[in-house]
Image 1 (cartoon, rainbow, N blue to C red):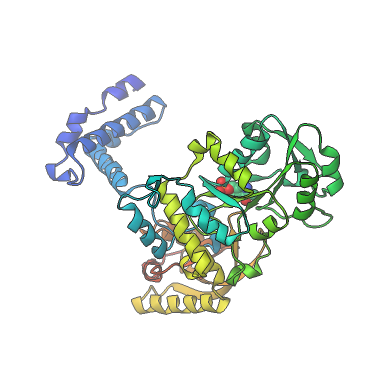
Image 2 (tube, protein in one colour):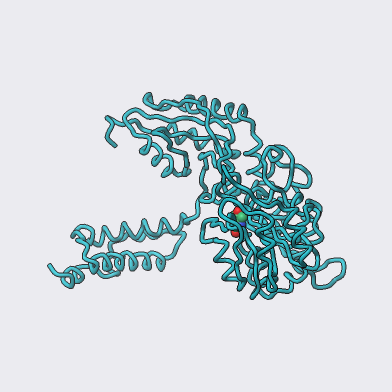
Length: 471
Ligand SMILES: *Cc1c(COP(=O)(O)O)cnc(C)c1O
């Protein structure tokens, strides 16, 4: 049968709708939504037929199309962005939304966003206010900067800084720092986008102060130092420090900008052990501007923080690009709530910091209690759970290769491969993501959040052993 004949056998939308019982229409959605889903299901079949796919008679039956349309509608209602239980041992997981927010922070957000608020209104002066002032005051408490500004993310921060101070002029960067962060953020590309001219200095593994010195010219506007973030250089390496670069910039009347990536705000608790430059240290070394992400080690919402000299921040505030990169009230409120917790040292309300702070013993305790919980629910005889030491990571391009000792539960199931079990947990209604390594599936409990033990235990207890080794 040729394509046009096959196409003619596709039922009409009404035919499909007729064979769906009235009760089939989801009460939450009108008949219109169902009709649209039927239309799209038929269109998808038509595309497949045109593309040369052999579509079976049964698939083209109105009943079958009706069922598929209902599944389509179900997916629409379920939404695509779902809650996931991250048991990979990677604390700032780029694919899993980076930094989760605590209930305490979200309550602050709820209180301020379910009503009108003074986003751009100065309640004391009875005059127009600036949305940028809310977070700035808190940031200045946390680092020795004269002024601060928050934009949509750190990529936006870098773009804004380069556009304002270096468009049409030269920016000196070490060849060892021409990084790609992922998601299309490459330092050379952002330079091009901003209109700045990239001046590469040094070599991949070694860049000395003298390399910067000889590269400075008439049109140089800025010295830019980027944190290497997601890779590590070992061996015959050398880089120029923040203080030396700050001095060089000052002597030559240039702006020195440090893109720190993660932005470790406090030295407290777990962060004291992480050897990661903090905005405070880098500003004290004399950097004119620093920028970093809001949702890496800061543990807040997606945002980019810029802090440093008041005159420079003031120019950034006047740049028309800021209108496109500015943050909304959700980000401002969540950022404020997170920064307040940094200030008060309530790091337990910042989930990524709480996850990094947990001692290996604490994580081991979680593992043991999870195993007991599964046994209480009475799991399959073929399910074997073992508490094993693991190596967790910070993630998010922060401290690559740096291991955080942790513990996990190794899961094995009689007659099933580790990839089968991994998929079952991932496709579970609670979407549990573990890590398969060397033929073993391990659930690292360092990143287990409040209230997640129960669903994980239920998912494990619900695993069904197989007849043999074939999945
Ligand atoms: C992560 C990172 C960025 C990008 O930050 P986003 O907040 O993801 O936009 C830029 N520079 C460095 C050095 C980074 O580590």
